[in-house]
Amino acid sequence: MGLSVEAGLLGPLGEDVGHMAATLSIFLVGALLLSVALVFAPRRSLSNLMAQPRWLLTGGILGPVYVIVLTLATPVIGVGITMVGILCGQVAASLVIDHFGLFGTPRRQMDRYRLSALALILVTLGILPT
Image (cartoon, rainbow, N blue to C red; front, side):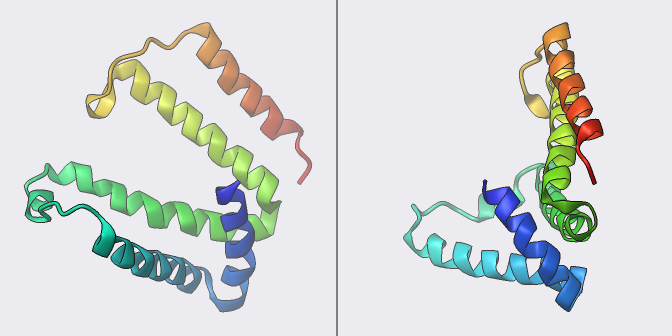
């Protein structure tokens, strides 16, 4: 539900202030909220963050890309199709990650049930009106 609400808010905001400005505003509000939350969070060493493999930090690139896609797609194709499209991409990527055990995750063989679930999402995407 939260992602759909976010898409519904970001679409009009992006149309009014620009897609990049809308994305930046969402992340600034999020950074402010996280800064306040860190005051009350259990203390951990931030120095450990820089000791992590750099590829683990690339997840920070995906957030803004996702929000920009929401901001651009929602006014054009609507919240419903945007969300089903994102779900389709998420499931497809998840199947690949599981199948090959990427990023240190346990391997889970791609089978007909998983592929059927993806196919049903693709069918849903195909029958939704724009």
